[in-house]
Amino acid sequence: MTAALIDRFGRVHRDLRISLTDRCSLRCTYCMPADGVPWLASSTLLTTEELVRLARVAVSLGVREIRLTGGEPLLRPDVVDVVAALAELRGPDGPLDLSLTTNALRLPALAAPLRDAGLARVNISLDTLLRSRFIELTRRDRLADTLAGIEAARAVGFSPVKLNALVMRGVNDDEIGDLVAFAVERGLEMRFIEHMPLDGGHTWRREEMVTGEEILAAVSARYELEALGHDGSAPASQFRIVGTPSTVGVIASVTRAFCDRCDRVRLTADGQFRNCLFAHDESDLRTLMREGADDARLAEAMQACVSLKKPGHGIDDPSFVQPSRPMSAIGG
Image (cartoon, rainbow, N blue to C red):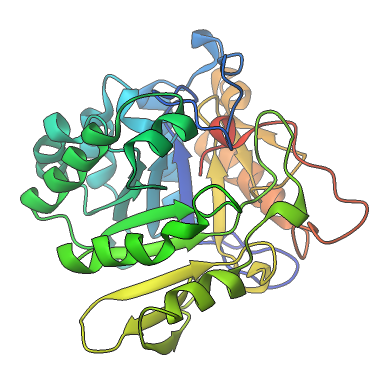
């Protein structure tokens, strides 16, 4: 087999998202119920050695970028060790592009150790600047901690620091301009995301979603924008805020799907390999590995999984069925 992760539509997959844990310190309304969801059994979770081994196999198949996700990845006790081990891997172009998506609550303590271990970039979730709304959205009074985490990321020199906001109608769509202003004032990149059907309660309704077009109109009402297009396979449509060095991105995964150029694959915290965020089928690499499979067999399993990738996620198809796993168990 060719030493690459190529599907039947010719898409080459170079971006691996690795979930370090399904656990989270927040209970965001769009992600999980107030009481949370059943956590994965600890015996099913990949050890650091297993995780790094699978990452190494993926890199041998052409992966050049790894992003660590969750749940909340900073809840994994050995997260710094995981970063250090992954930072030692070398892809076809040299060191990997190693990043992490976080709610930032633990960044004040971990930003410097993560940077020193080899982490290059962070994406931080920030859906609101209002304390009362943050409490309502996350069911936790932790906005001050998130803001402190953002400052810690800036202070240690992560670049770029991207802020991700999921926009919801009647919830936080009135803060779009304020979130952009917050990012511009601090030299950060703001990205807005359409609400996708990946909530633990399966309550998503398309008619309640704020579209990328609406988000862009709200930003344009306050700032003059210059379209920059897409950066390769990156999901966001990028715009420069005229008169500043700052950019804003809109990820319209539902209304302007980027499936035709998607180069992502995912590894869940319990060792399941997924070819799409919305996939219903997974490849159980954990069991293969624990039963003694060598690296060549693991590579074949990854390639077989990718070969079955569908042309698109099908959210707009009447037959679309939401994946049984919520986002917290898949990894963002």
